[in-house]
Structures are given as C-alpha cells and as structure tokens.
Image (tube, rainbow, N blue to C red; front, top):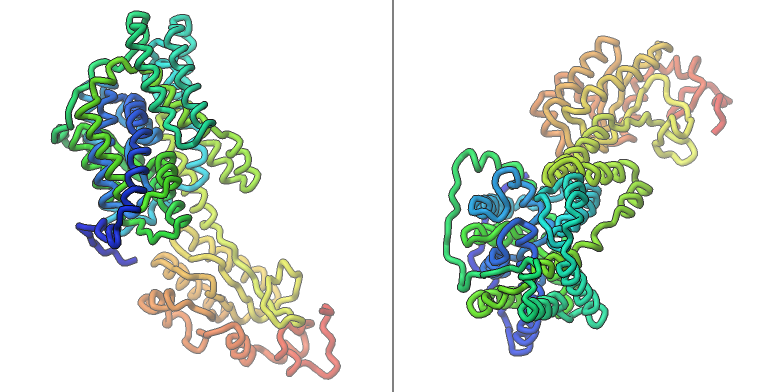
Amino acid sequence: MRITISFDLTPFVHWFKDYDRGKLARDLIAGLTVAAVLVPQSMAYALLAGMPPISGLYASFLPTIFAALFGSSRFLATGPVAMTALLSASVIHDMADPGSEQWVNLMGVLALMVGFIRLTIGLLKLGFIVELISTSVITGFISAGALVITLSQAGHLLGFKITQSTLIYNVIKDIISHIENTNPYTVAIGILSYAIIWLSKKIHPLLPGALIAVIITSIISYFYQLEKLGVAIVGSVPQGLPTLSVPYMDFPTIASLWGGAMVVALFGLVEAVAIAKRLAVQAGDKWDPNQELIGQGIANIVAGLFKGFPVGGSFSRSALNFQLNSKTILSGVISGATVGVTLILLAPAFYYLPKATLSAIVLSAVINLIKPREIVELYKVNKTDGIIAGITFASVFFMDLWVALTLGTVIAFGSFVYKTMYPRLVVLTRNPQSQTFVNAERENLPECPQILYIRPNMPIYFANAEYVYEYILNKVSERKSNKALKFLLLDMEAVNYIDAAGVSTLIRLFDELKKLNITPAMANIACDVYPILERAEFEKHVETDFIFDSKGQSIVELFKRLDHDYCAQKCPYAVFKECYTVKPPGFKPSINL
C-alpha cells in the first residue's frame, strides 16, 4: 500500500467554470431552502447533544461553508446530524453535566479531535478504512440509536426532566417514574408541531414543515405566555456571530476522549461517504472520497474553534439539495451564510420557541429509522450478519452508544477473522470428461495415489497458517497408509497474499514432508506472492524443478517422476490422460466416469 499526502487549497475553483445566472438561481433556491430546514434542525440537534440551542446555529454556520468549499460533493449538506449529536453526547456524558460550561468545552475538544482524525484520513488517502464498519453493525446501530433519540426527547415532549443517558433501560425507567409530572400544554405543543411537520410533507416534500412549526408554536408561545404554564422555552439566545474560542484541553482529557473520538469520526465518515457517493453516482458527478474527508475534517475543526460540536453529512438535507438540483457547492455556502444572517438578525426571535417543538423536529427526523425488521431480514439473508446487527441493537440497552458501536464493529471484524482462520482447502483431481481440475471430495472422483493436489482458497497469514499446516499433514497421514504418495502439489492460484508467518509455516511444512520422503511442489504462484517467498529463500526448501507455472505443466512434469510400475500394476484409476500411456492394453478404470 502506498501512502501519499496531498492538499488542494482551492478544490472549489472548478465548480465555477462556465458559471452563469441559471446556475446561480438554482444554487440560490437550493441554498435558501436547505437553510430553512437547517436552522430549526440544528437547534433541535443541539439539544440532543446536550448543548445550548445557539450552539446548533454556530455548528451550522462556518462548518457548513468550509465543508462545501473543501469537500467534493455539490449535494452533501454538512451540519448537525442526529446520530452524530447523540453519539457525541454518549462519549462525554460521564465527564460533565449537559449544557454546562465544561460540557460545551468538552464538545469543542471532541469536535477538534474528530476533525483532525477525519482530516488525517483524507490527507493520507485512507478513506477505505470506513469500510471496516460493516453494514450489519450500521443497521443495528441506526435502529437502536433512533430508539435512544426518540426516548431522549420524551422529557421535552412530556414537560419534565429525565436522566441524560444513552442507556435505553435507564431512560425508560426514569420516564415511567416521572410520568405523573406530564405537562398537558407541553404535550399539546409537541403534538401540534409534529402534526405540522407531518402534514407539510404530505402537502409537498419541499415545504419546510420544521420552520413552519417553529414560527407557529413561537407565536402561540408568545401570545399565550406558555412559559407561565410550565412549557419550557429556548429563552435568551445570544445575538451575533460566534467568536474564535479555542477550547481548553489537557493530556488526560484527550486520552479519555480518544476512543470515543475515533468512533464518532469513523461513523460520521460512513454516513458522509455513503450519502455523497450515492448522490454523485445518481447525478453522474466525478467524486473524490478523500477530498470529501478533508472537507469533513476541516468542518469539524472549525466547529470546535467556534463553540460548536461534531458535525457530519445529513441525508435528509443532502437529498433536498439533490432534489432541488443545486449546480455547485455554492448552495452549501449559501445555506451556511443564511445561518450567519439568522444569527445576526433573528437570534432574539427564538426566545419564545418551545423546546417541545425542537423535540418534535428531532422525532420527525428519526422515527422512521427504527426498523428492527431490517435486522430480521438481514438474519434471513446471512445469519452471522443478522446476529451481529442484533447484538449491536441489544447492547445499546446496557452500554453507551459509542461503546455499543465499537462492540458491534469488533464482533463483525472478529467473525471475519475467525472465518479466515479456517480457510477452505480443496483436494483437486482431474475430471476425465471435462478435462478440468475439480474438487475431488465434492465430485466423489478418484485421486492419483502418488500425488496429493491441494489448493488453499484464501490468503495464508499468521491467523490461519497453522491450520493450513495441520490440514495438509493430516491429509498426508491419511494418504501415507497406501505407501504410494510421492508428491504434495500445492496450487497457489487463490493465494494472493502471504505474510512472514505464512511463509515460515510453509517452509516448516515442506521440511516436514521431506522427512516423510514426500517431495513438495508448487504451482500458480501469484506475482505478488513470489517475491515474498523469494526473499525468504524458499528455493532452499522446494527445488526449482518443482515450481510450476500452471496446473497442466505441473501434472506433465510430476507424472514423468511417478513410479510407473505402480501405475501399471497397482493403481486402479486413470486420473490423468497420461495414465493410459503406462497402463496395460485394454485397461479399464475401476470407477467408470
């Protein structure tokens, strides 16, 4: 693998080649429409992250602009995202009280760490590592995460405080114990807000239901003084743009956040890369995943420096961008700039906004993500994947979200490694009818008593090398009973990689075979594997005369060295066409093929 570092200071320039008024109009419509969704969503997701609502607007201003400028997709809408917000909260929930100054500072540190991780991955062009989080883990985690988000909003929707935890069991227990404190006015506002959002989607997909709900419920809250009736409102919102503020951090803090930051960074990348790739393919755009990671990294660093929290790519807002057919990344810049204008001119207008409205916005965005049926369907397709998804989902009931995601990833990776520890090794023979080499045991065809022909169907490395060694020696032991076995032919066609442990184990195998008076031979060694064997001086253990380029050549050459008297007098088979050259006249194989 070759690692190179490159950074383009102006990746956005090519978008403005042949730019015209028509494209500007499209970008302007898309940018303003997405901003209408982004403003209320960002405040709602801020509450989800345990942050003041204003922090959501801070995280939607400069981070959105920088992600657009340094990313690769014209459609990917970056900013606060429900899953990333909740995952971030789960990382620091034991370190401070939600909403406190220390919590806000830790969120800034976390955003910086997430940003540097993503930026490093993009600069080193290591975007492929996001594939390490399997689909089964994502399926289980998203359903569980959406359930946690839904339950976490119960307090704001019912009108009482609940424990800030990502453990489903604790949240449910707390809701039940405080259910008698339900505020009917808060419930009514929540239901009204959700109904407005739901109805808006039914009327037209582009209708900004969340913004409409914010306006209507804020007006109701103002005129009916809902705060005096026990309805929690956003309250005073600082007016003006965020100022540069480097969060305080020390080594113990960084050390304690490191594992969680990695999980947040990688999960967010999976979301962003998947969204951007899908939309780029549908639009026929040229897309660079590593440049996208650079953009996501810079966006999070900016969020950390300007009182925000970790951000990512939003599927709903990106899909809206795609639906409106934005022409360039300018639509994202316009969305971010609109949030900036909102901070300067409209921040005080959010004073009377009920928090129940923000919770309804969150609920409307995630309720459809709770799909345990997908886990069942996954199990029907592949039991292992279904079990991994189920474990990831169930673990959220008992552990923090980021730990559950890590556990699912480790189990998925472990199951893969386990399967590679016991690779499929095939004993080959030739089918006289088709003249092709086939699985002797599966086809129930005879093998040459003097040649044991085995093909490993997987790379040989430290985790499975000993299994390969034991398997081959066991097969040799089975065949030695007839005392005719002379050669082990190892077909390396499917072995596209071998590590040092694999090489040393093969050498040990060949030396052991020689002690048993069996000559090792190899065929079809891949061009990537041969230099590794060569550096280990494997020619000292396998004679060069017994290293062949193909199956056919290996059989022709080995047949010349067989005991032809045994072939003629004792062997009841004619496995190879060459066999008939030494068989007596009128010979008929004992097994008629």
